[in-house]
Length: 371
Image (cartoon, helix red, strand yellow):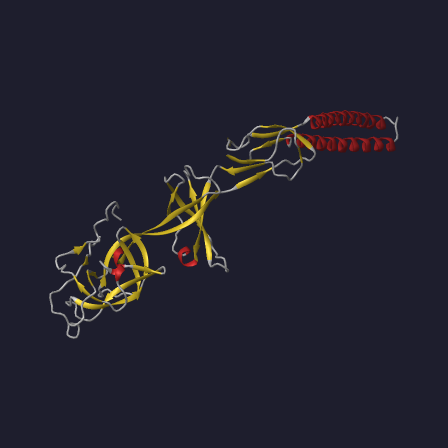
C-alpha cells in the first residue's frame, strides 16, 4: 500500500498586494487531498428476525389437550413430541376399525371357500352355473369390503397419530398459546418454532447502497451488551420498494450470542478495501448537517495570506482521523485544517509555518488497526 502524505503547506513569500491593509482573522494550517486505503463499509440499522418461524397446530377439532411437553426457549429435535391430545375416543375408533378389518377378512375367507366348493359341485352337476356366478359375485364383494375396512383402519390410525404434535424440524420454541385441558381446533396456532434456531439480520438499504453489497459480504453487528456479532450476507433483495426506493439485505447470524428475534441492532456491512482521496477529519465542517471545506483562494501556492471560500463537498467513508472526499474538490486544491470551524466564507487568513510538517495517512490512527 502506497503511503501518500497529506502535506501541510506553508510559505514565506510576502503578502499579496492589496491585502496589506487588512489583518488576517485567524492563523490556520492547510492540506491537500491525499490517497489512503480505507475499509469500505455501510453503517445501517436493522432488525434481528427468525430465518423461518413455523406456526404449529393440530389437525383435529374439538379435542382436549392432555399434555404440553415444551416451554418457550426449549430446543427440540425433529420428530420430538411437543403436545399430546386426549386420544381415548380415537383409540376406541382405531380398535373398531381393526375389528372391522378382521370381520371383513373372515367374510372373504368364507366367500372364497364357498366359491371353490361351488366350482367343484358344478362339475358334478349338483349345482347350476347361475349358483356359481352368484358365489363369484359374493367373493368379489367380500374382497371389496376388506379393502374398505383396511382403508377405514388406516384412516383411524392416521387420526390417532394426529393426537401427538411432533416437531417438523430441529428448532427452538419461540411462543406457546396452549395449556393442558384446553379444547383445541384445527388451524389454530398452538406453538411457534424458530426453525433450526437460526436467526438473521435484516437491514433496509437505499437502491444505490443495495447495488454495492455482494452476497457473502461480512456483517459486523453490535450486541445488546456491546459485544460484536459477526454475520454473512445471505441474500440481497432482487427488487426495491417503488415508494421508498429501498430494499432489504438478509445476513445469517451463525452465532447470534445475546441477540434475540425482534431486537434492533446497528451493523456495518464490510465491502472490502479501496484507495480513495481523503482529508483530515478536522478540515470538514458540518453546518445544518451539510459538509463543507474552506478552500484557499488564489493561484500562488506559496502565499501565506489568502482568503478562503466555503465549498460544499461530498464525503464517504470515515475511518480514524480521515474522511473520504467523493466530490467537490480537486486534488491540487488546498483546504483549511486547523481553525476551519471558526471561519466564514471570504475570511482572510494566515497560514502557520508548517513547511516541515506532514501527515502520513498510511499510518493507522491511534487505536485503529491497519486497514
